[in-house]
Amino acid sequence: MKYDTEVCRILERRQLTPDTFRLRVSAPKLAPMAKPGQFAQVLVPGMALRRPISICKIEPEALCFVVQVRGEGTRRLSLLQPQDQVDLLAPLGNGFPLAGDSGRHAVFVGGGIGVPPLLGAAAAFSGRCSAVLGFRSASAVILTDEFAHAGCQVQVATDDGSFGVHGLVTDILKTISFDVCYACGPLPMLRAVAALCRERKTPCWISMEQRMACGIGACLGCAVELCRADGSHYYGHVCKDGPVFSADQVVL
Amino acid sequence: MADMQVKIAGVPFANPLIGASGTVGFGREYAEFYPLSRLGGISCKGITLQERPGNPPPRIAETPAGMLNSVGLQNPGVEHFVAEDLPWLKQQGTVVIANIAGSTPEDYCAMAERLNSTAVDMVELNISCPNVKQGGVQFGVTCQGVESITAKVRKHCTKPLMVKLSPNVADIAENAAAAEAAGADAVSLINTLTGMRIDIHTRRPILKNNTGGLSGPAVFPVAVRMVWQAAQRVKIPVVGLGGISSWQDAVEMMLAGASAFQVGTAFFTDPYAPVKILKGLEKYLNTNHIKSAAKLTGGVRPW
Image 1 (cartoon, rainbow over the protein chains, first blue to last red):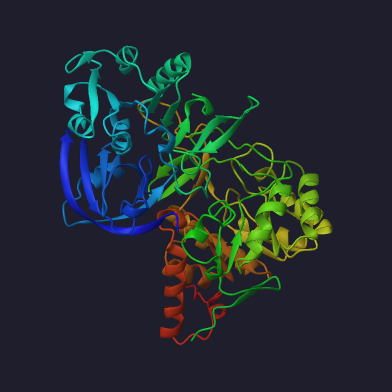
Image 2 (cartoon, each protein chain N blue to C red):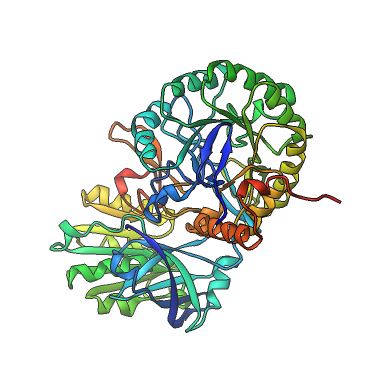
């Protein structure tokens, strides 16, 4: 079985910023199946569609998620407390390709709520990694300690200069050398990161987001425009073909 | 123990639950959860003569108690279906219904012809997809359109033929009657209701296609009403669908006049929804000493 549902008990809930919080849930069935970069479809009682939430950290019998309140569904999730239960469908998607890269120097480039899915992959590099994380302002900064703990050299950029470098993640990225890049964040950020990697001829993996229904490849809702080898375009799907794609493969 | 079997257009189903087209793909994703033989049947993702890329994203928007989609019939084409998907599906022990769509009546006829010599158990004529400019709904909105396309396809189709009707019409019972008159063996209803959502911050519609098809619990009462109206009008079996998410919904749909029912959006909320619906339905029949699921059909007692 590749994925399944499990009713998971909330072990821990921590507020990270005014609109993001971290949930650690007991998932003895799903956690052993999960890989970094995969995601879960989280059921919000009373709503027709689950919410796709990236897996931030995988423990032997637990999973961690960082959720940003964006609408009614994520607002309701934000009200969950320890001992409450939540129904997950996981692990979904392909995850980050890490096997061939673990001996190299990796850089993790995250923007805002794109930061959490990268954390699980950082652990695979045992110290040979950097994290370049971008946020709107100091009040939105999350997970810097966790990336440092995973062995990354961490640098932060903020839009307003209230924390770290005043500017964009790519301003920092230009100053460091790396063998492989993993990125997740807003589209303009992914475009800039992909362009920089292309210039340097460095492999770049990006994790994409799309509005989603089934999460497993049946409904074809979460389309993403991809390139074939011959240059023609087609629609793949974030849930099944992704969420991680080679940057060269996606029409950004 | 109640008998769960039903027969639609001569085709025996182990139970009256069919996975609705567009929500269960070609079955593979849900076979991860349970054997597909648990389902009475599967109506495959709508297929066309040639591969279709589908509509640009975003294709999904959530709504109160439902969702909008504008997938736009993305599919690998009939030859791929016959070569790759059908052989696997036929081994799963469930009834396989091919949902076909086209841009012209000739497309539909060619699809039907192509499927005659295959192991498909039934053909569902999709003349109600609201998300493509060419193909689908323009054939399904008027009685004349329904009658004309059904009659043409009937001439080329040797498989049991079910016509899937659009709810975006003045009188669905008339359209059901038109399909029956033109030789349909069954009708299925409803397809999605055309809807729209707008992002108030960007003032853009959420769907790139601007409009999409509404499904989920939000449409259930509309579907029950339409099935009830259609079932009174025609003698051929009516397969009811639209927002069924619980066994209670399934019972209600059958009481309204459905001989079988399809489950769609509920798969997304809970992949195990079909299994739970069937368990609940069977328990309801046993508790109430109803000998077979088929006995529920049309059992409503209107005021």
